[in-house]
Image (tube, rainbow, N blue to C red; front, side):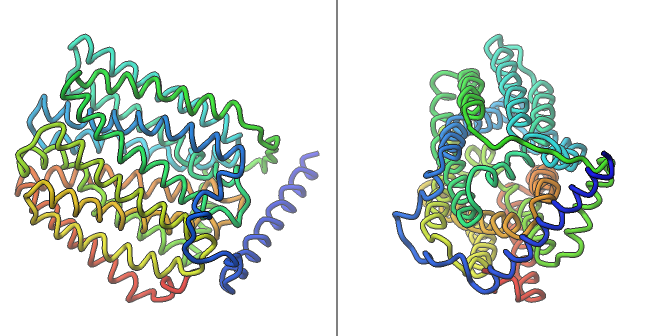
Length: 441
């Protein structure tokens, strides 16, 4: 029986690798692009799949609550401590579990039903939000509570993210994968655009506890959607290999595939030096713009609105074959806009710049995500996306800690300026040393 299982696994692996190679060949020829070009009617193609519709709307509700909590939590700890360094501590605490558990989360995503994994992790996140709400309502919340709960939330996310990112492959056909990923970004950034603004106003008028309560309740939507989906039965053929061996397999694949390796490197640089500027927005709102919690919410929402516009644009392009060019535009434009943002101290202009920042950021991250998922064979996708999400979520807290420290020492504008210059240099070097990335389809 054991030999039969191994032979079956070998056949599955050979078939999936062959399909992946065939897909790469088709992509390089520019196939799967019969519907390329901007068209609004193609923007929501993935919603024709019933399971994806459930996923989309369930996640939409949950993400709204999540962004309310992120915004309120950041301003709450800054309100308590008046230290930008603590903003970095929270970001760092939430990311440490990524380094410890994310790769194992990728193995679990390949071994078990992604739906079951997501139901468990989303339930844990709901309970953590409820605990923070109770502590805040009772006026018992302390900085260490927020940091500890951020750590626990990061632990749940380390197991949630690889399954969540790769789950979309079970909900749509491969030719519509890019559209589905773009709609995922649309859903995420709709929440980013609305959630922080609502959180800023709710914080100002009702207090942060209500933001955390709404987030706890919002998880009901995605859990219900996951349970309602009609998916193919999950069949797992275990090879008898250890989790460490399977993690190594994923790392070896990335090491041998230069395109996937460079794409992950690009994501890593944006996470470490670029996206971490968001950590400073609560302090920026007060110290630089002279605002309050509502100002912080509007800045976060403007960034989300820009990302939403970009995600809708990508979704509307259909099965296009110039992903590499869009990736180059986004990755170069993003740090340039960060440099501009660091010099602007007027609220209306800051909102416009951060809107454009959000657009460039999602253009970069969405295209990179789509390319990696399209090129990786099915039997390795969970592990490779585990590495992908590790670089994104794992380096973000280190960047947050670095950004908070720089702001404490030199000031918020100088911290953002330094990180943006580093991000720009890395992006330019990538396209100079690997110009073939711009030709990816």
